[in-house]
Length: 198
Image: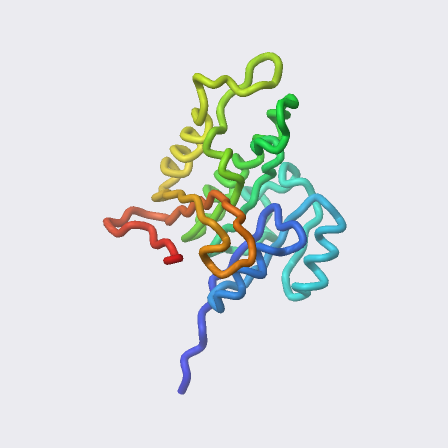
């Protein structure tokens, strides 16, 4: 008698058209059961490619995992918070601090749903997340201050956290796209969080 394969039930916050979902499910160990995005076009695309997933088209601010009993239990939380206002690609334009705040929702979901694993992907400049001056520019002397507080918040909830910059080309993709990945594991362990070998 063959043993039934157990999948990690995952939510893909800020799911976009579904790139993270595709990658996660390609592992053969993950089933994305919930996908959330505020942009209807992204949700339509995700639905077309993942019809078995529950989709919610709403701003992440309007969903409260602490009080919504219809949300599924999760083993894995995937999140790619809005990166535009962290990226250097904006040049010298003022930064919208409200739009930089979406990563805090990861902490809310982590505390409410207690997934065993969390994986967050973002631009490398996310590590520099710090307060802004009155002109909407980062205060250089406080570079990375809010990012470190965010990591400490996940640790305070009970997660062991690690982060690395990974180049997609090192893992078989036809692009040299470098992204920051943050991995959090619930509980404490003497073992390091595992990372893939290039």
